[in-house]
Length: 263
Image (tube, rainbow, N blue to C red; front, side, top):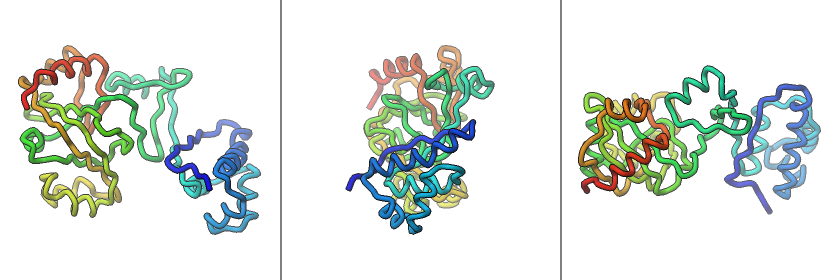
């Protein structure tokens, strides 16, 4: 029996009554693509077949219902907010990050669901000096994050920015895997390699059910750290709170630098 495992179904906010009515038929098409009958779908959702029929005929459908329906197909629901390229929010974010625009010059920000990772991109990670030192020494092999695209491919390049008081780009590493795990499991598996005290760990992940563990490989130290003043002057770089996609000109410069790093 076919299913849509691992696929992402995009949902868009309806601006007219007609688009709202499209939701049910769209869900029906997904069910048919998965080779499921209404009866089989009803069993998965633990409802009566009549309820499936009502959903697929259109009309008002709760977001929670759409999500459960999509997840029953083995897929994940992601909802994005699309801003015109000239919107104030889009302009402010574009100035700070290397934002990519979709159709009709719109900037798309995820609202619901795991963040997609932009293909063939490098990232910059902001990390406190007491942790960057251990990463560059090779003892800290995992970096913990409250959020990060779990779809980042193995081998993604991460440039390491050491925060205040160092305030410089200090090295580069490969991300060999990104794991999304329950908070308790992250602690039990990585307490020895994350080099974070339990009180700090609990404070960092407070209010979260899941977190992300970035596993590092092939860590290299820049022979000459690149100070923030130079990064700002030459590339308009501003340190991220967590991570950002490196701008094209910054990526080129950092790749040149990483070719002459010390191991």
